[in-house]
Length: 365
Image (cartoon, rainbow, N blue to C red; front, side, top):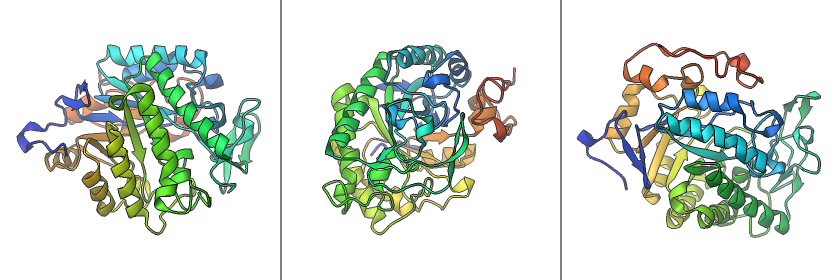
C-alpha cells in the first residue's frame, strides 16, 4: 500500500504514478464536454486541456474505442486515424504545460441512441434492457434511449480487441496512459452491475462472472501497452444510467480489486458523486478496495483543499481528483494553492459545441 509519511505528502508536491512523475497530486477528472465535431478531437479541445495543464494528471473526457460506443452527440473517439491525429494536438498541448495525460476509454454501451451513431454502428450491451428517459441528439432533439442488442460471445471478443487497439492508438497519439471507464453506467459497468446485467452465461449471474468482461478488457489492454499505462475508474453504489446498488456489491468490488491488483494496473480511481446529490459511497467499500489494490488510489467527490490534504496525510489515497472546478477555472491548481476565488461554471454550456463556456474562461492573470 502506498501510504507515505505525513511530512512527505503535499497536495501541491510532486508524486509518482507508476514510472511517471506528476508535478502535483491533483487530478483533473474526466468530464464529458461534447466539443468533438464528427467525433474528432480538434484545436479548441487542445486549447482547453492546455489551459488546465497545471494539473498533475489530466484524464480526458470519455473517448470511445469503437463506433458502437459513440452514444452521445459530439464525443470523441480513438479508433480512426483522423481521431489519433486530432488527439496529438491535445497531448502535445498538455505536455507543454507539464501535465501528464491519460485518455479515458468510454464505450457508452446501452447509454446511447442510434441517431448519434455512425452508419453501420449499433447500440449493444450485456442485456437488452433499455435505459429510462431520453438522450439529446443534434439532428432529432430529445430521443428515447435505443433498446440495446444483447452482446453474443463474438461481440464480447470484438469489444475486448477494440479496447486493446484503442489503447495502442492512445500511445501513438502521445498519451501517457489510458483510464478504463468502468463507472457511471457505461459498457464496462453495465457488465459489473446486476441491475443491467441479466446474463446467465459466464459473463453474468455471479460476482466473478459479472467481473469477467472488465478483467478480460484490463488484461488485454495491459498486454497491449503495459501495466504502468493502465488505470481504471469504478463507481460502486453509483446510480447514474440506471445502475444502483445490488446484493453483494461490496464483495464483488473486493474480488474485482484483487483481480485488478494481480494484473498490475497503475491506479484505481473511485467516483463519488454524493456532492452532486447521489448516494454517499460508504467508507466500507473504499476500504475493501484499498485493502486489495496495492498501487495508486485516486479519490474524488466534492473535495476542498483542507480535506484533500487531510486524506493524503492519513494515507487514504495518493491522488485527489477534482472535476467541475476545472471547468470555469482553467488555473484551478493555482487558485487552490493561493486560496483565490473559485468561479462557478455556466451549466448551460457544459455540452454545447464551440468555445463558449469551454475554452473562454479567464485565468487570474
